[in-house]
Length: 360
Ligand code: PMP
Image 1 (cartoon, rainbow, N blue to C red):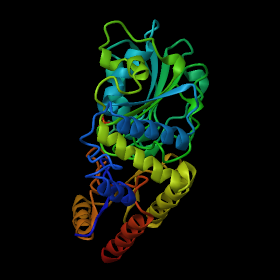
Image 2: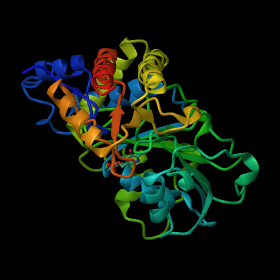
Image 3: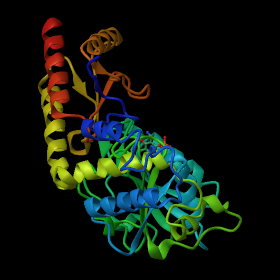
């Protein structure tokens, strides 16, 4: 069977060369006589894999020396709790920006451990934009500020990173890490679930500035303390070994294609193909204001539910799968992460053009 173009919000497509490499190494990883899935996480051979994964991630993201990289479990959702538990400190106050369902979840978890102030929200227009923010809006006496750089469900993206003054900025980058160049120095913590731009589900990336380690709240479970994982180099307990190995291959693939800067150009081109068509269509409509449009998740709608359904059915039969939108927006959503080939977007737009012509 031919491989499909998978527009799922996650888990999503992985680069084909990565899957091929993994299949070649499945039975015998580099002469070890075993699969990466079978080897001890304490073995020399595995240590090399996790160290390489970290080194490659540091290289492609330009992560400075004063930041620690962690490979954890529990998804981005566990970070909604780990961030407040580790960063609230004495003050127990944080500023959050509410730009969608994932921000809301982050807010409700943080509220369990301290005082959360919602600095701004875009809920008034069903999260179809990013509120404008300036330094004066942030409480310089709080412990940290939290944003979601890309909103997977609503298809919005921060056009620029807000200046939060001295307040460490924490970013949920689950759906756009490695898709565009970010200056890591602007952040106190970056976290991301892997299953969009990094690799298979199961590993969560946390990048944390070293001065923020070691302030964990009393009675926090050991497994939720960043410092414990930092000291153990992400090997405090058994890590998600295979997911980390695939992530290593993805980072290498990204490096070999020119790094984040190169993929950002491809991503901008891919998104433009789709948005240009949507903006000129008489039938399809993009749901997000142009300035705030995501490069990764592109929601769009047709005038009726019947047309949405017909469109999705036809798409599947053409090998364009998982285009159904999230129920809170409706219609369709094309998630076009790093591993979605440009050809997949071209094929989607070609089908949209034919659909439009047939319904003119
Ligand atoms: N944050 C964002 C922006 C997401 O898109 C998602 C998952 N789609 C999550 C958090 C939750 O991630 P996980 O399923 O890894 O817990």
